Image 1 (spheres, rainbow, N blue to C red):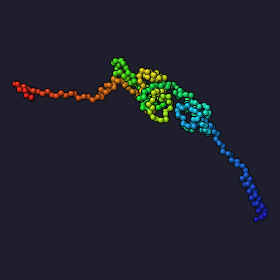
Image 2 (cartoon, rainbow, N blue to C red; image 1 turned 90 degrees about the vertical axis):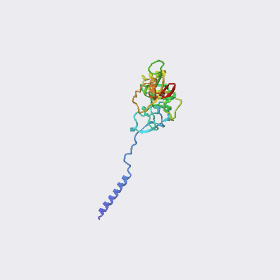
Image 3 (tube, helix red, strand yellow; image 1 turned 180 degrees about the horizontal axis):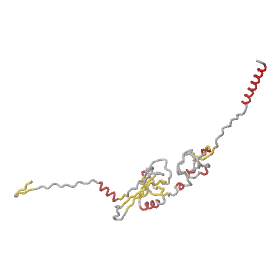
Image 4 (tube, rainbow, N blue to C red; image 1 turned 135 degrees about the vertical axis):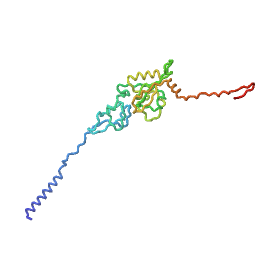
Length: 263
């Protein structure tokens, strides 16, 4: 191998090594990974029941990727304080405008509806099972002093069907315990403007009772009118008939002269 060839190989090695060393010392030219843009929104720091007035200790903030921020999310806690939760809100759930009412329980009354309070006796509270948001029928019982009015002196009718309970006493949120409350005296119902006068008249002229409905049963039942005369008639028809009384057969006696003898 000639001297010229060896010199060429040597120069190639020197240049190659210098190139490798230079490239290794170059700064990292790869683009740095970009962090997604985030937005701080208001979330619940604890469970917030429906109807509860929201206080500062129920709220916190959490960063969300901008593209994942829910619509109508609240960005400032000041816009939430003292407002009423329109629905149940779970811990860490974003506070949305749609989940909030105004200030006070009246903000939870749907538009076009009225909250009407009735006095219900303890028996009509369905053994303490009633709670806010349950659905009930309202029965109205009245007595009559008119003779021959066709009712027998008393009548019960289904005044309203499938109405929602807005509050029990002053509670618009169901209590944590499900024990029967023997002290229930008032129940507030959500009714239409036309139903409110009927409810008031039924309460002033009769006695109201509530019957609990299945929440999935929304069909009108159109129950019949119950009268005292109809109940008495039903009882008479259901009573077993008494067998007719049987009398012993008469004994025939014959007389022969002055002697009495049986035949």
